[in-house]
Image (cartoon, rainbow, N blue to C red; front, side, top):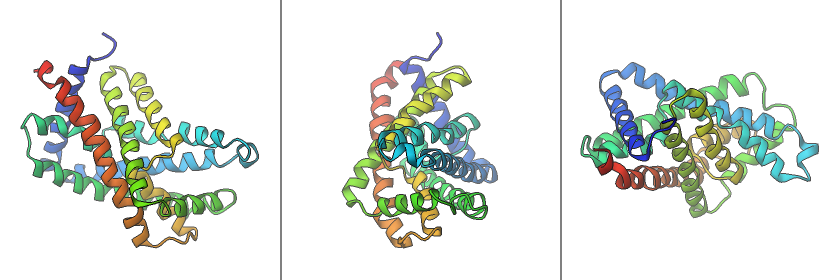
Length: 265
């Protein structure tokens, strides 16, 4: 078949999740590099999304959906790079570690330690990319990007806490469905398309992805957004992260493992 069945996808997710835990345990240097690269790749997608999505203000001013579509169409390059190149992304691991956990092939402690380490590595990679490849070279200094990134950062810390959390659920539900679609594919082209469509949807819908926000908010802060580090953490990253875990681990990892694990064994 051109694609894997749902039960075969669980097998693939099981193997992928176990390999991630083995890498963490035995290949520490490679593991750290891969966590940072995932943050870099997502930040790269965020940069492209910003430059293209907000680069046509004359067209998008009266057509707000066009800006969302352009930004959404560009952002998925980040997840495509993560999936195809095997980087370690916190939000993807939310779902990918559920099959081995539910099959009792790892412990809850193993999962939580992996999530914590990957999250920190993603943050470091995203911040380094913002500092060197965006702020230092002046990508967001000219208009309309300067005003756009400031507005994005301030908007992300101005929403009610619960709204950010629910939007976080939506974001990682889409991201992890994209990863499941990529696992179902057997060719690189199909994997890329599987990643693209759900991720494009979450960006266009304005959902909140914690790792992407490690790019957008610090970038806005560097350009002068009225946002403190505490506001970034408490008003966005914490609720978005909680929502991402629910959307990825529960709505994708747990549900699909429950539905198809027995059939795959």
